[in-house]
Every structure is written in structure tokens, then in C-alpha cells.
Amino acid sequence: MCAAQVAHRPSPVTAGAVQPAASWDATAPCYRRRPMPTTVLRRSVAQLFMVGLPGPTLDRVTRAFLAEHPPAGVILFKRNIRSAAQLRRLTEAIHATGAGVRPLVALDHEGGRVDRLPRPFTHFPPAAVVGARGDARLAEAVGHAMGRELRAAGIDLDFAPVLDVWSNARNRVISDRAFGTDPARVARLGVALARGLARAGVLACGKHFPGHGASVGDSHFVLPRVRRPRRALAAVELAPFARAIRAGIPALMTAHVLYPALDPRRPATLSPAICRDLLRRRLGFGGVLFSDDLEMNAVAARSTPARSAVAALGAGCDALLVCQSLDAARAAMRGVEEAVAEGALAGEDVANALARIAALRRRIRWEAPRRAPLPGWPAHARLARRLGAA
Image 1 (cartoon, rainbow, N blue to C red):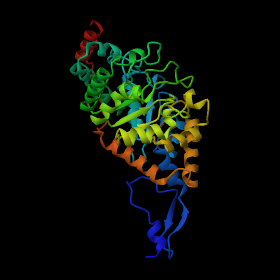
Image 2: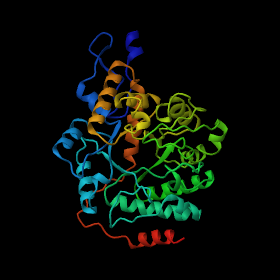
Image 3: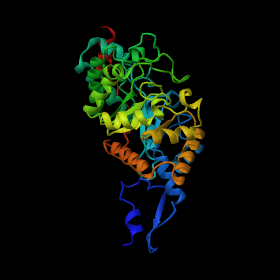
Image 4: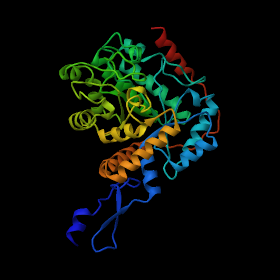
């Protein structure tokens, strides 16, 4: 075997993962780089994305997009949900679109004002109400109840719990979405809620790393800043995430927030110092790191979807949310394809991200479609009423 073959022989990766920007011609005396087939690259890159859909059904245009760019998953919003029966039909249709890889279906389901589901699903009070009780068993019961209902509707992943500490009373973006103002309590109850979701068969994703509770601005519209020294961030903002990581939480989501003490130029989603150095190396997180929605103005007002996607992957994100527009998702995917083909994104990093996403998917207990009507959950309703009356 010649020196070039030893130096450049590709290492095996998880099935479905993309190799570094090019494949190799093994028939030559020494391996030569040749372009990766376009279809393989396009489908591999699509697996790095979670996209939003325009409506409550998979119309012809949406089906064509999902067939050409099969994503890692789909995130649903109120615009996608009309009734319990329609939701289950939609999740079954989404699951059936995967080209050999079943897409994850996700939802932001926290209780309180972040609740997308109609009756008969239970509307739980916000996390602050659970936090006021300070009871981890109660928080786990809420997570388990939420998870049972989500699982019955075909939801695989819940973007919860909120692990932000509400450390700034002027912050209205988080406020009652947080379990409270005490880092230890937020950590304990957040981990308990995630444990309840897991018991019901739903993946939990803690958010918004490294902490959104001290900001003032809303990252949907502006780029917030958290001007705390490193020591304060470690003692308050990072504490719930560190505990969730130790407890084995499978996924986290970034914050589109600037932390000058950690990175003076880039928000967390786009910061290698935060995603790689802090989260992966110092805190030891080995799960899937989701970006927050790349169409939020905190990043979208400063860059194109393509550039933001490449920057987020380069920073250490694994899965990218593009929630509002399939055109934006297509543009972001194309930008990543070009970056991989040109070597601007390391193939090894992309392969590692795909492997982590594949490992997350393997945690799901896939079930056959259910034909019976969704039940009511009177015990869950009683739990919600008991919390609300406290």
C-alpha cells in the first residue's frame, strides 16, 4: 500500500453518514479524490436539518421537498394542528416519508403559553407553577403525563424542559417558562421532567444553552446580550445544563444570545467557544445539539440561512432548525452542501453529527400506527387542576 493510500484511506463511519467532501477511487494505484455523488451529498446534508411545514397536511409541494431533501425531522406548530385525529394522521404521514430513515417529529410542548395542542390533550400550567411546588416527583409526573399524550399522537421529541434560570426579572421571553430563579431548583425539576418524558417514550431536549434567563431582548426579533462574568454564568446559567448532562439528557438546544464573557463576537449557536469548548469538552455533553430556529431575527437579520447553517455546524451544532419556510430550508441545505463539497466544513465533523443524530433516533420506541381514537386523560386533567389550584 502506497503512502498516499495510508494517509488518505477513509475511516468507517456510521451508516448514512457523509464522508469528508469527496469519495475515493480505489481502482487507482493511489486513491484519488473524486466528487461525492450529488444525491448522496444532498440526502446526507438533509439529515442535519429539522424543518417546519407550511400547513396541516402534506401537500404535493411539501411531499416533493421531503422526498428530495429527507430531513432528520419535522417540527410542528399550531399552523400544522387542527385536531387530535388530524395530528395523528399527519405524524403518520411524516413518518412514512423517510427514504429508509424515519424522520423524527418534534414539538415545543412546555405547558403554559407554549402549548400547541387542542383538546383532548391536557393543558398544563407553566413550569413556574410546577417550580413553585419544588417537588421533583410532581415534575416527573407532569413530564410523564405530557409524554404519554405526545406519544399517543406520534410525537417523538419534545423541545423541553426549559433549563433557563429566570435570573432577570425584566426578561419576559422566559419568565414563567422557567422553573424559577434558583439554579438548583431549576436543575432538579428540569431533570425530573425530562425523566418523565423518557419514561413515556419521548425524547427530551433541554433549552436554551448556555442560558436565556438573564437576557432582556427576545431573540425572535433582536440579538440579546447577557453581560455576566464567567464565574456568575457558571454558578447560575450553566448549573442546570451541567446537571442535565450528568443525568444523561439526550439533546440540548442552543440560545441565539451573545455572551461577551464566553465569546465577544458570536451568539452561542454560532460559537465554537461555547458549543465545542464549553459544552462538549468542559461539560462533557455527548448528545445531539440542536440550533434554535435559524430564521429568528437574532441570526437571520445578520446573515443568510446558508451562512448561518454553515456557521452553526462549524461551531458544533448537530441538527439545525429551519422552522418557517421550506425555501429557507432548501437554501440552507444547499449552502451546507457547497461547504462540504469545497472542504469549508470538515467531513469528519459532519459525519460525527450524523452519527449522534442516528444514535438519538435509535432511542425511539417506534410503534405501529394506531387506528383507535385518542383517549381522554382524566388523571392528567386532575393533575393539571391540582397544580393550577396550588
